[in-house]
Amino acid sequence: MVRVCRVVPKDWHKFQPLGDVIPRTRFIVFKTPINSQLSTKIFKDQRFTTNDLFRQLAERGQHLGLVVDLTDTDRYYDKEDITGLCIQYEKVNCPGRGFIERDDCVESFNQAIQEYIDKCEDPDALIGVHCTNGINRCGYLICRFLIERLGWSSHEAIDAFEQARGYSIEKGSYVMALHKAAKDSRTKQRADSDSDSSERRKKKKNKRKHQEEENNSAINEVHMINAILGELGQQSASVSGTGYQHSPTGPQTAEPSQPQQHWGFAIKRSKYAQLNQPVTNSTPPDNSATDGTPLDEEEYEEEEYEENEEEAEPEPGKGQSASSKRRARRNRMQNCMKVMARGRFHEIQAMREEIALTHGNARDL
Image (cartoon, rainbow, N blue to C red):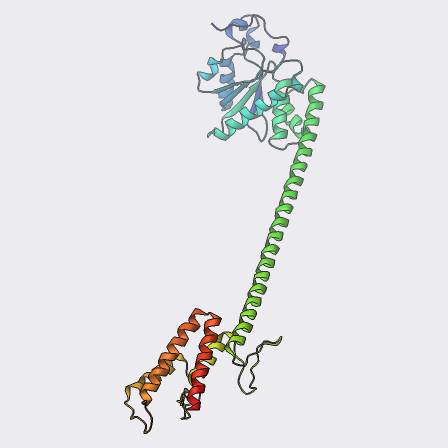
C-alpha cells in the first residue's frame, strides 16, 4: 500500500494550480496534485487532484506526454494515476535546502527532458513539471535547461518562466545561481569555439605542412632520377666509344655534323654503325631509305630478309658468297641485340672489342 501524506503542504492552497505553456517550449508548470484523502481536509474550490489536472488540460485542448516530479517525497499522490493513462513519469528528488548545490539534480533533469524530446514523436505532447508549489525548484531547473541546452540568456529564461507560471521565483539565491550559470555557459561556449577554431587552424597547418613535404619529396625524387640518368648516360657513352662526351650543356659528338641524340639511343646507333662496317674493302650495304633517312631496326631487318631471298652469285676469287656474308652479319647483329638488352657494360665492351678485331682482320686481308 502506498503511504500518503497526512498534511497538506503549507501555503499550497494560495497558488494557482496550473500555469501556461512557456513560449517556444513544451514546458507547462503546475503545483503538485494531492490525493483524495488530503482533498477532504481543504475546501472544495481549493482541491487539485490528478483528475482535476487532466480535466483542466482537456478544457484547453492540451495533453501531457511526460510528467517530471521534483518533490522529495512520493506521498502526495500515486504515480500510477499518471502512468495508467500512458503518460511517461520521471522522478527527480530535489531537497528543499541546498538544492542549488546539487548539480546531479540539474543533470538528471536535463537528461530526462532531452531523452524524451529525442524519442517523442508527438510534437504537441507537453512536458509537465511540478514541485510542491510549482515555483522555485521548477523555475530553477527549467531555466537551467533553457540556458544550457537551448542557449537562452538568464533574463530571457526567468522572464518567460515567471510570465507563464504567473509567479516570480521567490528565492534570490536561485536567481543569482541562474545568472552565474548563464555566465559560465557563455564562457564555456567561447572556450569551445576557440578550441574548435584552434583545432581547425592546427589541422589546416598540418595539412599544408604535409603537402609541402610531399612536394619536396617529389622534387627530390625527380632530382635523384635525373642524376641517375645522367650518370648512366655518361657510363654508356664511355663504354660505347661512339665519341659521346658528357658536358654541362649535354652530350656532344666528336663529329660536329652529326645531330645530338639522347644517350639512351647512343648504344643502338653505335651498334648499327659497327655492324654495318664492311668485312672487306667492298662497298657496304646501304642502311637507309630511298630518301636518305636512316632505317630503323625493323625496316633494316626486313631489307636484309628480302636480300637474303635473292640468290647472289659468288664473286670470283672469294671463298664466301654475298648471301653468306649477309647471314653472318645478321647473326652478329642478333647476338649484339641480346647483349645490349641485358645492359651489362662489360659484355658490351667485350663485344665491341671482338667486332673491332674482326673488322681489322678483314681489312688486313
